[in-house]
Image (cartoon, rainbow, N blue to C red; front, side):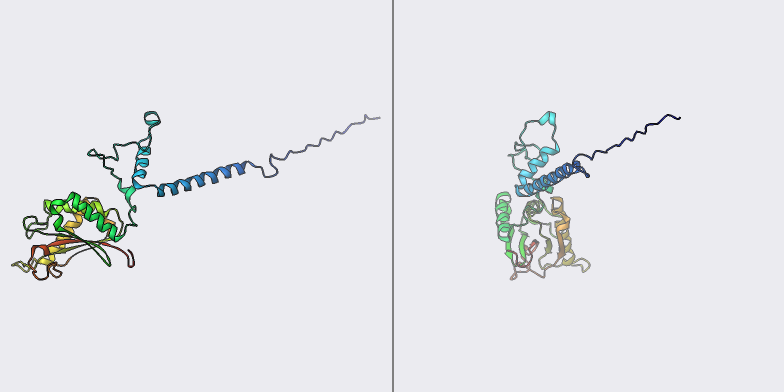
Length: 258
């Protein structure tokens, strides 16, 4: 008689992962992601709310930050990269100032330009005319006997002309409106018909454009560069008046803007 064999049956129960059938670790990761995104957008909002010069300080601080060299230094302390060497005047990097003054009204821009010309161009302020009109703000740089913008018949700006264009370039960067540049001459004509006031006014407008760009004007803001010869005199009763030789810089504002 054969020996009886005992059959043993083992039942193995699999334990469900912690947190149920789907687990809960992904929820923690997702919560961290949402928190990080909220912090990021909050940071972006705060950056847009602070003044441009403070943004410049923050950007410069982190650009050159070193944990071992600058730990504990406040970002609001003076930084040589954004303070000028003469007088501690704040210099805002171009990338920080773009769009910063888009809300400046025409009247505000005119007053700012007048104040800056009084301060930086007192010796030639009578050669800078700033006016508000329906389409924007017009800045006119006019010739004067003894202080011309260009040499007689020439297309290269004089030292006086370069100085004025530099100050204008520095101040129109506070708005990002489109800009038009116009060249105008007096009614004096050339002996040769091969070169006329049309060519002269156009080349002077282009020379002014180059000078403005050299001093920081964004070329993408240019809408028009043109010459009008003597067709639009400033002094209508005397077409040969030297003040008719001028450069007009027009900051355009959209229709209905203040």
